[in-house]
Amino acid sequence: MKEGKTLLYASDTLGERVTEYCESVSNPVPQPIRDYHARIIKEREDSFYMISNFEAQALIFLSRLIGAKRVLEIGVYVGYSAMVWSHAVGPEGKVTGLEFKGEYAEIAKKAWQEHGYSNIDVHVGAAAETLPTLTPSEPYDVIFIDADKTGYPGYLNKILEMSAPGAKNRLLRPGGIIVADNVLRRGLVADSSSDNPWKPENYDESQESRNIPAVREYNKAIAENDRLDAFLVPLWDGVHVARLVD
Image: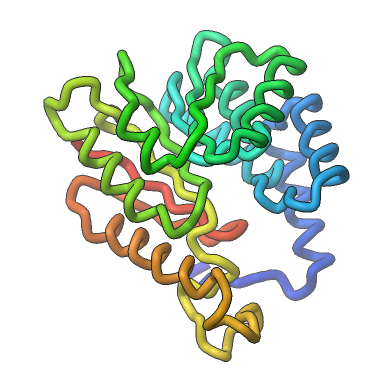
């Protein structure tokens, strides 16, 4: 279609049917991982921290598109997406996770063991502190950011600093990609006016009033950095994909 604006489907029912159709004709997420996703939704009130199975399909495709074998994940939660990345890179690949909460990390490690994923490890603590300590023997192919939104600009700055041309133990390889989740925040990043029906009534006192400026700063920094090629995908809650040129 020639129009550039993002058109949403006319009803939730149609949107669900289109999503189900797209999922059905795309490479599937393995059933045991899907079952774990369903279990977390059923058992945990904070399951909204997980990505969807549909987004997972896109990430698997994206990683295989560039032949990724090494993935760094900032924000692990209870381990679902790390298993997705592990499946994507295969048993000879490597997934490294950074997770703030020890409780989440322990649940994740148990899930990885139960599902037979032995190529994932996790560093517990604030990512702003654990990220600078990484000294990979080989650079990562993909870095996935799905953590505290106020930390996004700082994570990007550190990633680029640690991935400078000629840097020892550089973090991300030339041509590697940075994928950041939740960069539209129900459209509030693009429009936080009263025209957006998703704007909370108590917006100025909410966490979103801090998240939105930080995510805007992140998106702007990506767009203005000559070292990066980028495309912001207006699917799910917004996924910003950036390719490191050098």
